[in-house]
Amino acid sequence: MRLINCRTGKFEEFVQNVPAYAILSHTWGAEEVSFCDMSDPDSAKQKYGHKKIKDTCRVALAEGFNYAWVDTCCIDKSSSAELSEAINSMFAWYRDAAVCYVFLSDFASFSDEILAEAMESFGARESLEKQEDQLYKDPPPLTVKELDLRDKVKKGLGNCKWFSRGWTLQELIAPREVRFYDKDWNYFGSKLELASILAWITGIDAGVLRGMPLDDILVGRRMSWASNRETTRTEDMAYCLLGIFDINMPLLYGEGKKAFIRLQEEILRSSHDLSIFAWRAEGNDERRFRGLMATSPVEFKGCQRLVKPSFEWSNGGEYSLTSRGLRTEGLVRIGRGVAAEVGNYFLSLNCVDERQKKLILAVSLRQYGPGLFVRSNPWPRTTGFDHNVYSAPKLHQPQYICYKDIPHLDNVVLLSRSNAIQIKFSDDIFDVSTATTVPQTDWDLRNSMLLSFQRPYFWGMWKVKAHDEEDGISIVCVRSSGWLLYGIFALSKLPAALARDGLLPSQVEEILQRLPDRKSTECLGFTHTVQDVQLDLGENGMYIPATLLLVTSAAIKRVKKSRSGIKRVQTLLKMI
Picture 1: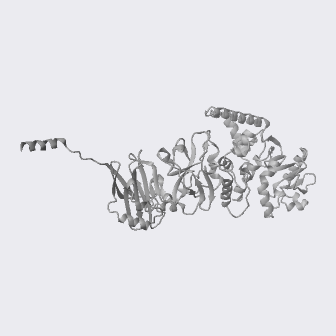
Picture 2: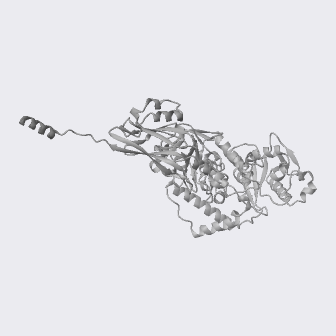
């Protein structure tokens, strides 16, 4: 680590046994002093940025520190290797500093009276909100006096550029001791003293500013702290968050927004926190389908109040990143009944809004390929559940959820239903929760739909049992570009040839053609008949042709022999 000797103004490097040092947090301006500039002290002193280095060393010496670190000059940015090491080490350097000086070059300090009044007001409001939260009550509205103080704080301290920069986020959180100075280097408070005010300005939990471990805060909530911040380079919006999530990764300037995707990938590999998917797309995003990952921290603005549920509930599944998407097992659930409001399928995120602690957040999913899913229209809100999360059945076979946005994703998803075959039946007779399919990954089980995935030739089998019965019906269908064959059979009477494993569409076609009476079947006192109806599954004006196989069920009427008729015949015989 390269430090400035506050007495000599020269660099000294330390590998081990780093001495106590002060560290500067600031916003860059014109004529900053670089590493190369420090080799020529006389030239460096002519730059405007040299004064803040000099003042940092002056304050550090006055407080007993002989060394200081300033990011403008202590990193040789001409060396990509050193720059990468520095950025990956930045959080640790700020954390290990004896003290951090925050220099606000665009802030003239409040009067002592206003500052004291603001600190007391913000602290009292924080205590009141905690007290009301424990009682599950909303706090009373802000008073006129509180509103006036907040307006003054916002216009003065809150509008400082320092609070809008990406890099200064970790510089506020990491150090144990942070001291704030105005544009004239007048000290006006520490992070601990100003915690309530800083929490209100930044959205960062006051507990974190007082030393709460970051691991106690959900990933989505931590992301929200950066949602109103900016960096000069697009990539730095990801790199400035490495320490917040305890992540190390190589820097690739030029990759643009891919850097934020890489950051999310690394977070997923190191944690099992699904709140990373709790983001909400911005209001002007007109796409119907997205990958699981956000494009920037801006989409986490609505995650400031995310917490774990008050009750422990585990999805009981696992996930991993693959080239096909996020591979999940036991995490994707089928939405039925009221839960169907979220869409076809959903992925529970095991987090809640702290204001509505019983509502589990989830994202909607749409199937668009064999075992492939995509995030479906989750904006501008995520969807809440309560007991529906527990009762919804899981998809147990492995699923792959698209986690990156891909070109023309809307069309890819919608066209996956072109020439699909959907089955409709009576819920009063059949128990939809018992439905099984072959091939399993080709069916949208939530909608009883065999998806085409734009294949020219495919087949499928759908089975369902009657309520409280072991018997039921099975529908078998095979489709090519110009025709559709289908048949309905009682489960107990399913032709053995159709029960074989690994059937090909051509084999199913041949079997069905040998069965002339396949449009109706008898089962459990009903005659079940199937007929096809044309459908349009299009959305937003797009025409998507499909077929509905409609199952109608009619009770079988048994003819009873008439006893009176038999007696009349017997009487006639006697007369003869």
